[in-house]
Structure formats: C-alpha cells, structure tokens
Length: 199
Image (tube, rainbow, N blue to C red; front, side, top):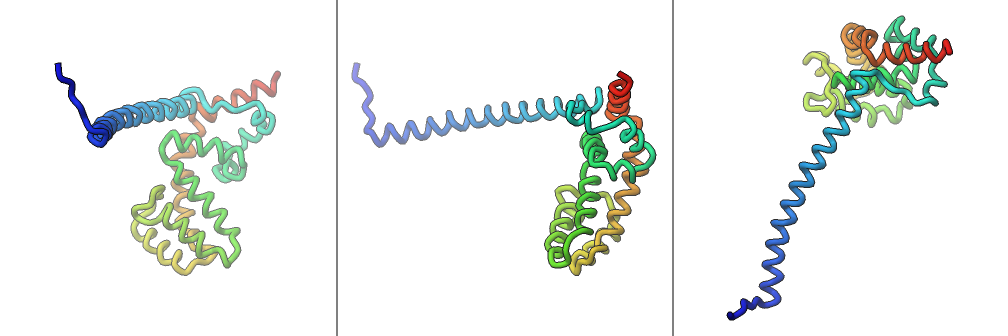
C-alpha cells in the first residue's frame, strides 16, 4: 500500500495547525479549570467569614483583646481607629461586596496626610479609582457630589474629598456597621477572645 509523503514544510505546517487546535483546546480547558479553581478558592475564603466568623491566627489573638473588640461596638469611629478593626471590618465588607467604601475612606485618610507637592497625583488616583462614573471601585455618591468632587480633584487641596468621604462614612455607619455588629464574623471573634481571656 503506497504511503503518504509530506514534505518537511507541509508537515510542520500541518503540525502547526493541529498543534494550535490542540493547544487552544488545552488552553480553553485550562481556563475553565483555572476559573473553577479561582471560584472554589474564593468561596472557601468567603464562606468561613460569612458562616463561622473570621478565624484569627494565634499571633493576631495575642494582639487583639476582648476589650478592644467590645470597643468596636461603641461606634464606627472606634472600629476604624483600630488597625485590627479596619482589617476585620474590611473582610466583612468584602463578604457584602462593598469593600470599596472602607478602601475609599482609608485612601482619604491617607490623602489628608499627604505633602502638598504630592496632592495632585494622589487626587488623580483616588478620583480614577473611586469617584469617576466608570471607576473600578466606584463609591455610592449622587451625581452632584460626583461632579463637585471631580472639580475639587482638578485643583486639589487637603479637603478635596472631605464631603464624599463623609457621605461614605455615613453610609457605612447606617448600613454596613449595624450588620457587622450582628454578624457571625464579629460575634464569633468576640466570643473566641472572651473564651481565651477566661481560660
């Protein structure tokens, strides 16, 4: 039976085309697997925070006291004044898909401490990331405030974001903060620390 012969260049071309198809198939499968793995790991991260509270490492438990965690329930201001409180609250907001609020608030706090010659760059970054209408982490402010903040960010001063920051703070205080205090993540953490204290 006569064999089929391909010139070296034809063979390479054929292998190239077939190889591409095979590679595309593999890449597609890899993408699906990667997405599945990403989703699984994301859910694994989120579910413990939502269901069983935030598990803290032993080193964090040493730094955190039950008294400090109780103080968080006195006001949002006290919660945000604590580095650990910010971290735990941010995790809670992530579970509610609203972490842009605390990130914006923290960015504004940092912005207020900025040296005058760096204000312009930081103002542009904050505006692009949180304020403009197609921002990746767009905060929930009305059109008028968005426009006013845009104007102030063009000629920045240390108070350019104050009104927007105040609005976001009030939103967190009235909306997310009361839910946080009733959340399993907060109550379990408090319970865990109180149990450790009583041992």
